[in-house]
Amino acid sequence: MAKRPATAKKTLSAANLKALGDGRLAELLMEMAGEDAGWKRRLRMELAAEVGAADLALEIDKRLNTLAGSRAKVSWRKRPELLADLATVRRIIVDRLAAMDARLGLDRLVAWFDLYPGLASRVKDPKGELALLFDGSATELAATASLAGPEVAAPILIEALNTRLSEWASWVGRGAAAMEPALARALLTGITEGRPKPTGRLALVVRKLADRAGDLDAWIAALPAAEVTKPEIGAEIARRLAEAGRAGEARAALEASRPVSKEAVGRGGGEPPPSEAWLTAEVAVLEAEGDAKGASDARWMLFERTLAEAPLRAEIAKLADFEDVVALDRAFAHAAAYPDATAGLRFLMNWPALREAAEMVVARAGDLRGSADEVPLWASRLEGRHPAAALVLLRARAVALTRLALGRGGEEVEQLIQQAAALADQTGDDGQDGFLLALEEAARPVRRGRR
Image (cartoon, rainbow, N blue to C red; front, side):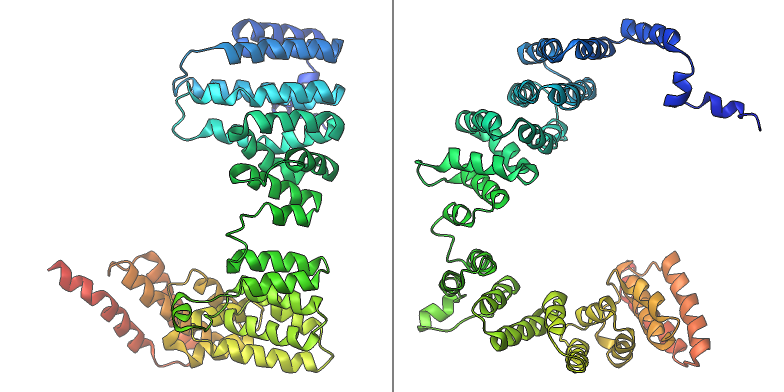
C-alpha cells in the first residue's frame, strides 16, 4: 500500500486533528481558551451541555445578560467580533440547547432576539450587518418554535408580538413560511380572535401566518378595506378564492377590482387594458366557474398581450393531438410579429422555437435591440443551424455596443467584428462592408462631440 503523502497529513481537517489524540487536543484548546475569551466561553458552554440542558441554559444566560447589560459603544472595528459572538451564542442555543430541551431553547432564543434594540442603539453599523444577522435568523426562530410545539411556543410569540411588535413583526413574518402549520394557526388565533381588525405591521404578520396556516378568510380579512378593490390586490383575492373552489366569491372579487381609468370615470365608463395579474386571475375564475371556452379565450388574450409562457403552456396541455401543433404555429407567428421585436425573439428563444426565431431575426433585423443582454447567447445558439440569423445578431450587438461605448470600440466589439467576418464568409453574405460603415456611423456623433 502506498504511503500517505506528508502534505495530506498536514492538511487541517477533522481526521488529522483526531490523529493528534485527545490529550494533545485538550492542551491546544486550553491554550486557545487562555488567549481568546470567546473560545473560553464556547468551551464552557460545550462542557455544560455535556452535563445537561439546565446547566447549558445557565451558561447561555450569563452571556445573554452580559450582552444585554452592556452600555458600551461598539466601533466598526469591534463590530465583526460582536457579530461572531452573537452568531456563536445563537448556534449553541439552536443546535445544542433546543435539541435537548425545546422550551429552554426557545426561551433563550427569544432573549437573544430581544438583544437587538439595545445593540442597535450602540453598534456602529452603516452596512446594516446587525439587522441582517437577526433577520436572517428568523427561520431558526420558526424551527425552534415549531420544535417546542404550539402549546409552548404560541403564548411566547404572541406575548412578543403584543408587547414588542415593531421588532417581532419582522421576525415572525419572515419566519412564518418555515413554521409548522399548527403553530401558525395557533399564532393566528391568538393575535386575531376577539380583537380589532389588524392594521399596519400586525396585518402583514397575519397575512404571512394565514398563508402558512392555509386560512384564506383570515388572509382576506387582514387586507385594508380600501385595498381590496384595487386591480392587483382584487386579482390576487379572486385567484386564491378560485383555486379554493369558491367561484362565486372569486367572481365578485374580480369584478369589484376591474380596472377603470380616471379618464373613463370622467366620461362615465370604459376600461383600460387589464394587467397580467388581473388576466391570470380571470383565467382562474373562469375555470372555477366551469367555463372552458371562456378560460381558453382568456388564456389566449393573456398570452397575446404579454407573451407569458405559462398561460400558453397551460392551453397547449389541454389540446388534443394536432390541435396543439396548430395552436403553437399561431403562437409563434404572433411572437414573430409582436410590436416589441426583442420581446418576441426572447419568447421564441426561450420556448425554444429556434427555426422560427431565426426567420424572425432575418425578417426584422432592423427592429431588434442589439443591446439586450441575451443577444450573444442567442447568436451562439443559432450559429450552428442558422448562421445567417446569428450574423444579424452579432452585427446588431456590435453596433449597439459601439454606441453605448461612446465610440471607443473595445475588445468585445473587436471580437464581434471577427466573428461576423467569419460567419459572412461561411454564409456568402456580402454585407460586411455595410456593417463596418454602420459601426463607423455609430461612433461618429461622439467623435464630433470630442472636437
